[in-house]
Length: 151
Image (tube, rainbow, N blue to C red; front, side):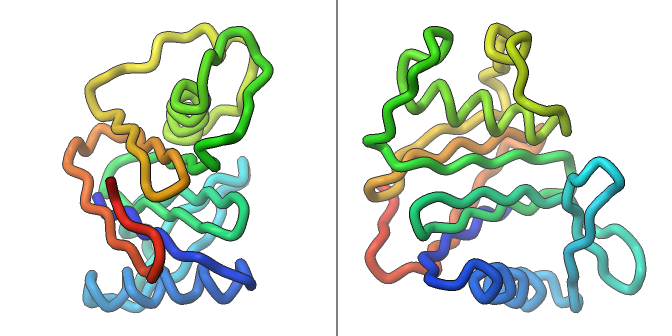
């Protein structure tokens, strides 16, 4: 699984830059399309070639690519969550990433569902917290940002 991070002033330009980088690494010309439910996926040569999840906050874009279903969420580390089932931002990003991986919306029942530790990774990246959830346990972060570094 590859996770790309990029700061942006224009979200569309940032998505294109990350998709171009992913295309270069995969050796295929890739595009993103959306299912009827709105879930994104990657196509190349007219066929789905991988799964993708997209999250952005406060000028930073995260995109996770995997051969299996994947979910990613990124938030500012200082964001306050006012939901009692989420005592901290780390819990919130884990729930969001898990919902995205499953392709379901956030609901009260999802707030109390157990999030599997296997395949879920939460880490600080600069001033942000990012969670990735996938059956693909290997995570490689590719940072296309000058002033964000993995901690």
